[in-house]
Length: 247
Image 1 (cartoon, one colour):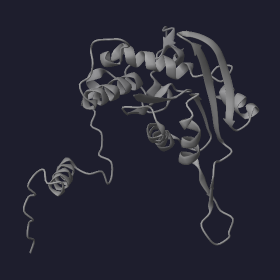
Image 2 (cartoon, one colour):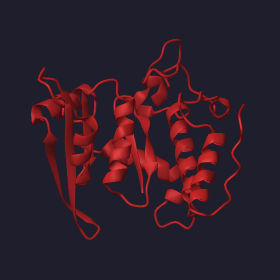
Image 3 (cartoon, one colour):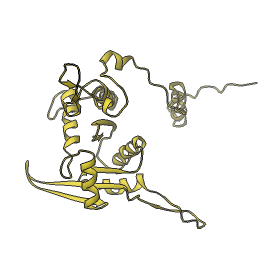
Image 4 (cartoon, helix red, strand yellow):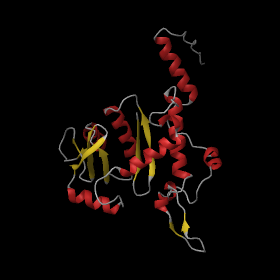
């Protein structure tokens, strides 16, 4: 199961996570990714009717309520975090009903946020559904009822990030273009340009040659291998390497 996230105003893909099943752990992991990308807690999150979203949003975005009293502060969800759901009912393959509900926040606050972010006229998940279609068209293992299956998560994970970063930096989005000057009718823009991450459309060569700086504190490949061997040794699978003496 792949769970992607999208920033509606810029159409920027925020990342995704893979899991064999769609469960609370997957939802929580992806919401933590959203929280890491957010500049503030002023968020409108529109999702489908999956029940795990409610608890996961409360867990990830709650903050400590400081009252000045001794003891551990109470954790509360900020009023600026809004959650709305689109619940679709089906009979077989036919859609028979759509219910829109506000879980956190007020209907007025949600409507104001939708207008401010140019997210349509009502609560919807159409933008992420369109992005899912883009991923399925570009990544063969995601094709529904297809024969090109991915044998393992490593290939699928790599493909997800390749398609996602290409979508962000290399593919102009029709809804993001601006009137251009100097004879051209439109100035094409990618989601990364709309989000202020770059000032031009990248080529694939530029994307693949770009060197990403390592995250501070992240384990190196050597450290990861050492940890893996140590864990395997404790389980009796491989012989642990001898300890090195340091004088």
